[in-house]
Length: 254
Image (cartoon, rainbow, N blue to C red):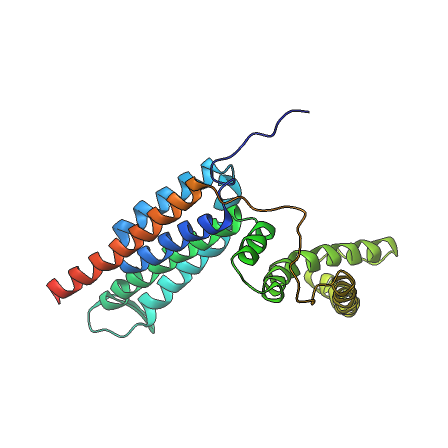
C-alpha cells in the first residue's frame, strides 16, 4: 500500500485550524477593506494548500459573495442619507449608504470567508475528539456533531426517497408544479425516518455506555504536536496585537 501524502493544513490539530480561522474572522472585523482584501488572498492560498480551493470557491461564491452583494445593494438603496448620487423612480443611491455598505460588506466578507474556510478544512469528527480531550462534555460534542451532520443526512435520505418515487413511476423531473407535487409527499416519510434514526442512535449510544460517568476509550486520538501549539500561540498573539493596535488607532483619531 502507498503511504498517504500528508497535507500541512489538513493535518493540523482541529483546534489550531479553528484558532487560525477565528483570527482571520475577528481581525477583519477590526480593520478596513484593504486588510480584508489581503486576508481574502491568504484564505484562498490556505484553501489551495489544503487541496480544497475549488470547493472553497464554489461555496464562497454561492453563499458569502451572494449575501454580500444583496446587502450592499440594500444598503445603497435604503440607508438614510442626504447626498444622493443616483435616483430612479422611488429608488435612490446615497453616498452614506455606499459608505455604510462598504463597511458592513467588508466585515461580512472577512467573517463569512473565514467561516467557509473552517467548514472546508476542519474535520468535525476530529474536532469533537479534540474538544472532549479538553474537557468538553460528550453530550455537548454529540449535539455539535449531530447538528453539523443533520443536513447532509437528510439530503441523502431525500435522494433515496425521490429515487423510490421514480421507481414507482411518479414524475419528479419536470416543471416546478410537478416537482412540488412530488416533493411535498416525501416530507412525511423524511421526518418519520429522521425521528426513527434519532431514536436508534440514542439506543445505540446507551448500549455503549455513553451516559455513564467513567473514563472512556477511543478508537483514535487527535495528535496535538508542538508545531500545533506554536501555530496557535502565534495566532493568539497576532490577535492580541491586532486588537491592541485597533484600540490605539481609535484612541488617537477619535
